Length: 251
Length: 305
View 1 (spheres, each protein chain N blue to C red):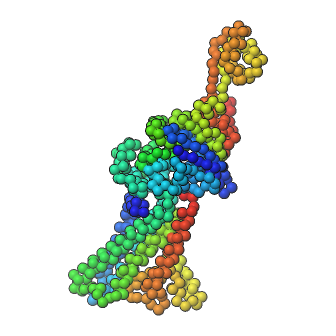
View 2 (cartoon, rainbow over the protein chains, first blue to last red):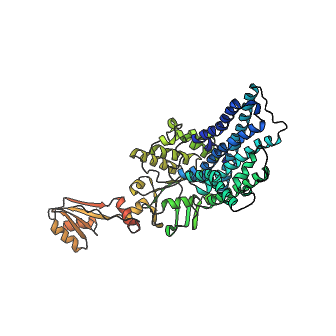
View 3 (cartoon, chains in turn orange, blue):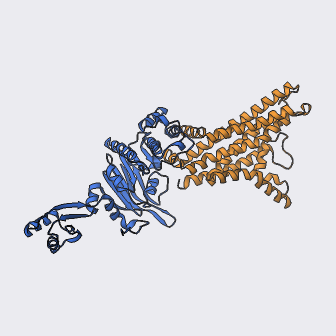
């Protein structure tokens, strides 16, 4: 298993696009935080604002990491490298689990870097402007910063799962991005119009995004942990379907 | 040793491989020959556990491919030199392959050197020529120093020098006692490197034999004669049951007789002979004849005006 993970890690880091996605994914929230910490009205700046900014801009990070996950498998089908991969390791589930582990770790490291960078940089800027930002006594902000790392990991695995099911890079990336940005909002509108109580609770991505909500859950939504579990469960279902299909089909 | 037994695979309503059985012996290069679309690649994918056969399967030294825990050490395969990520360097392509089977990094540099790609190992594969990609593919085959080698059309798209290089490598591997199975749709190419042939058409085995046996059984043979007294000689040969086709006033091709019989006829009749020679059709003709019934897309013969 270790050798398969090493092999998949080499694959991930030897494609230039993954490095560019990584830099983009980390840089975007950091730049936003720097701008806000530098330009915001300093007397109003609260630690929960900074946490909200980090988690809000991390939506982009998470989606980019989801693209890395989707491409890690769809590109193998596109270039035919899935064949030498399965020829070198005929135990297909081992390959897919190794890919999932590498994708998840890559996403965890990237999002952890985002959280740390953003927080350190905006605290430093804020203190240079005479304000101080501290997480002590701010359990919801703290939980949101940890939660957003979990969220990014789940989105990256969702991308991987969609990639296994769909196999085609543009289609998989489109589904990954349109689902949260368009599909869930349409479903939300339909459910609301139909008079369903608390429709957010049924929507996996919106529920999962509660992981990074710095203000804690509202009465309309699932709690932080339950939302994360729901989103994670949906992702697990997609990934298991993808893995079973990939293991059974002709490569 | 490779043993393929009763292998079948259908895609929808098409039978790609149809109850195919054959053996590949160690110490020889075995050519896997068939027209385009005859099921060679599907057979190889089924052998390597990539496609799931409907019946039968293949054993490599007694083991099914999917049972091998580190396959690269036992079976080196190259299905298509294009199965590489264009954005990855040749060296990195070999590195992930090596890592998956716990082969050391130093082995990557060894095989790069072996195929002559050391100087371009760091370049991205998209900048490689087809010949360089074939060499990279062969480097991947040699990575685990396997006893069994399976290659699908490795000479495809190579220039004569490249084809010669592949041939030398395969012959060398076989001379070390390894088992080598290599497919092609060109018999002439195969005849230069293979000792044994497995010939298939429409997914079925046509023949498994040595190259000389195959030519012996399928090649067209005739006797060419040149004589100033051609008419009389041809009549005498026809009387013995030969078929004759007259080429020009002095030359004819006789089928169904031996050179010895024609010589005796000439001596008995007192005909002067300017030429009497046995002729054999090309290997390509023999192959086309053997697989004629199974060509998936048969073209009409081109008739000279």
